[in-house]
Amino acid sequence: MFEFEIEAEDARSAARAAVYRTPHGDIPTPVFAPVGTQAAVKTLTPEELEATGTRLILGNSYHLYLRPGHELIARFGGLHRFMNWRGPILTDSGGFQVFSLAPLRKVDDDGVTFRSHIDGSIHRFTPEKVIAIEEAIGADIVMVLDECSAPKDRVYNEEALVRTHRWAARCLEAHRREDQALFGIVQGGIFPDLRQESARYLTSLGFHGYAIGGLSVGETKEETYSTLDVTIPLLPRERPRYLMGVGTPEDILEAVARGVDIFDCVFPTRVARNGGLMTRHGRLNIRNARFAEDPLPVEPGCTCYTCQHYSRAYLRHLFVAKETLALRLATIHNLHFIQWLMAEIRRQIRQGTFLEFKNSFLAAYRMSDQQARFS
Image (cartoon, rainbow, N blue to C red; front, side, top):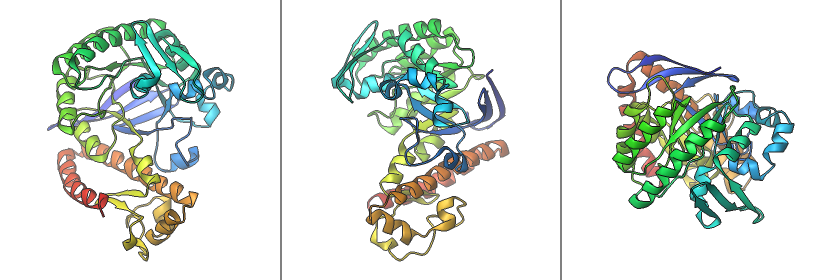
């Protein structure tokens, strides 16, 4: 049910354009998946998501397990029917929440015991339990249970890597659904030897695809990129590669150049709800007074619904007045922008001009974006 077909490869980098075929449709890669933590991408309907060019979304197993519950979702026929999304869905395993909610959990070799952030109730995740949850939710692409460690703690990363590898093997053994692709997750902090060890072990198990976890959690960008440099060459060319939780334009372009196919991140939607609007020339802080009488759209030439119908002045007014419509219109624009970027990346790879596009885009975006953040 799953096929990863590489259609073009860049001659001067590791970038590649491909199609990942899944039971709920084909995914053109490189692809960006907006985050729908609670079975919804905040403020938007599935139809509005489709209109932005979105083809893959991410759901969060940890949050969906706690509320509304995976059994309820299964009774509704799975997450696709429950939320009325017709395209492919990816769910994570809850491993990152184990990291981010550290005061509420205890890790042992068999699994994780944690306290719900909602009502304080006690719960237990084991590799087998996580697979049962993900099979009930019914996403197309699912993740193994892993332990995401502080990236610069060598001793703890060594201990966590042993658990992550044991849990990955147990997840693979427990997984039964043939209409789901199970991905292993490479961990190891910023330590090259641990990343290499993890990549070699996980690829020996034969997963459908491979995720790279434990990045964008406190390390520098240079450390992120160098970690990708030592990890990706060890992952199979014929399987999709997923960089978890990374999704700024500059990080996407740098990671695509290193061979990454799938991305997810809250960045475009979160900054939108805070008045940050993305353009090819950097991010606009739409709350700034200089936009109070600006008749232009967010980005002239943009074909998104927001830019086709509304001015910067109107959007600024909505944010200042705290109107909910401001969040929706900004989110539509930012997701349209990030999906335009992914489509352009795919086109440039096919044309053989990816590196020129990457360099010219970043030259304009980085300088303007830095100025916009502080204006």
